[in-house]
Structures are given as structure tokens and as C-alpha cells.
Image (cartoon, rainbow, N blue to C red; front, side, top):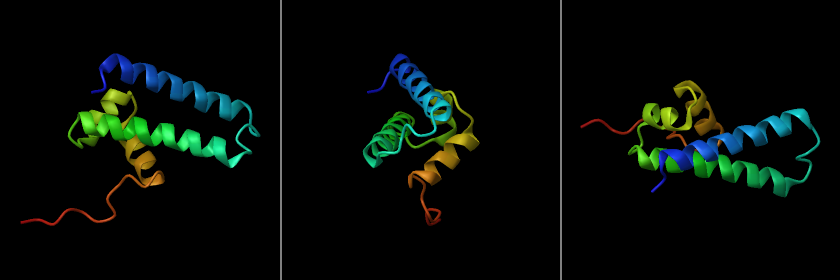
Length: 88
């Protein structure tokens, strides 16, 4: 189970990594580094969604980002459903 403190630390680390990449454009020339960055983002988002039972709004709060940002990142990482669930 991911605690709020762990989520805060992971979010801060991811933001620091993003800042580093933005300030050093060639840092991810190696595909393996890009894979690691994507994995970290995907894992963090998946854990937050798991903690909230898939509730995107609550997961965004845990990650301290906007719901819209989380939705866009989920789409980018292939974590969004492509079709809405069927209605009964």
C-alpha cells in the first residue's frame, strides 16, 4: 500500500527528474533512460489509481497534480481506457 508520504516523495522525485530533463535536453538520448522515466511515471500513476480504486480525481490529488494533467499523462502512457465502460 502506498502511503501519502511515499506518494509525496515519489512525486517530488519525479518532478526533480522532469526538471533535470528539461534543463538538460540531451540527457535521455539513450532509449533505456527513456524507458526508466516512463516506467517510473507509469508505476507512480498506477499505484495512485490503485490506492483510489481507479478514481482519477482522487489519484490526481494524491499525486498533487491537476486531474487534467493526470488524464493527459495517462493517455500518453497508455493507461486510459480507449472506450468507455458499457452501461447496463
